[in-house]
Length: 395
Image: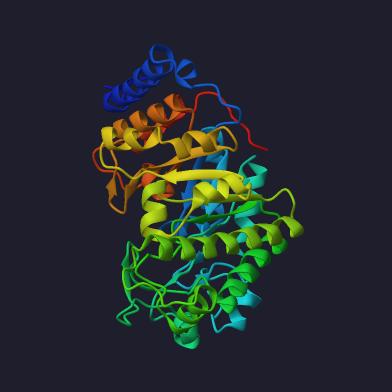
C-alpha cells in the first residue's frame, strides 16, 4: 500500500537517555541548589583542569583543542594548566633546552605548529586563564638526554644510589641546591613567561627533593662549609631536613623574584602534597612559601580514594590559613588512564571542598569524561554543568 507520508522512527532509547540526563541536572541544580552550597570566599572560585601528556591528541589537533576549550568555557571552567615540562622534555621550541642537550620535541606532523602558543591563544579566546605547568620539576628519567649529558647535576642517596620511583616510572633527581640546576630551571621558566602571553606558571609536588637524597659531593661540601659538620646519616634528622628545605625555599624566593621582574602580574602557582607529607617527605615547605608572599595560587593535591580521607585533609590549619590570603583550591582525581573515578565521588568531593571554601582543579582532562565505560560522557558533563552552574571569571 502506498502512503503520501510516513511517520518517522522514534528512538525511544535516545529519548529516555535525554530525559534521564535532564532529570539529573534539574535535581542537582534545583533540589541541591549548588549556589547555596558554595561558601562565600574572598576570591573567585578556582575551577581548573590539568592538560597532561596523556591529552596530547587533543593538544596537537587544533580543531579538537578549540572544541575542548570551548566546551570547558561553556561548562564554566575558568583555568587550564597545560604541561610544558615532562620527562626531561619541553613541549615548545626551547633554546634553553637545546643549550643543555635536550633535543626539540616534535609533537605534530605540522612542524610549524607551536602547541603552547595555540593553547594560550585558544584559552584566552574562551576567557580561560592559561597557567603552564612544570610537571616534572627537578625530576627526569635516567635515560633522558638531560640526565645523560649533565651527570653532575644528579643527586644521590647516602649509599650512592640515584634512581627513585615515581608515578611516571623510574627517575633521577636534579640537585635543587646546585647553581647550574637552579639556573636551568629559572631560564626555562623565564623562557615560557617571556615567549608567550601566559597568565602565570605552576610548580607541583616535583619541585622538591625526596628526603633520602642530597648526599652528592656538591651538597655534602656545601653543608660542611655552612655547618662545619658532615650531613647526618639519618636523612630524617630534623636539622638536616630543615637545612635542605630552607635551601629549596631560598631558590623559590629567587625564582619568584625573577618571574615578577619579567611579568609582575604573572600568577606564581604551586600544587603540592598536603603539608605534612610535602615537608617531611619531600622538603617542600610550601606553608612558609605562602607566608613569605611568593605564592599567588595554591592547589593542594588530595588524591584520596574515599570521601572521609579526602575531607580529613581539607580543614588543616595550613590550608585554612592560605585560603585567607590567596586563591586556594584542592586537586581532585577524576581518574587514571582507562580507570575514571565515579562521577558521584567527584561531585561529593567538589561539594566538600566548597564547604571549606576551596576551589577545585581536576586531574586530568582526559579522565573528566573520556574512556568511561560505566557512565556516559553526557552524564558526567551534566553533573559538572550543575556543579558549575554560575560563571566564575578569574580574568
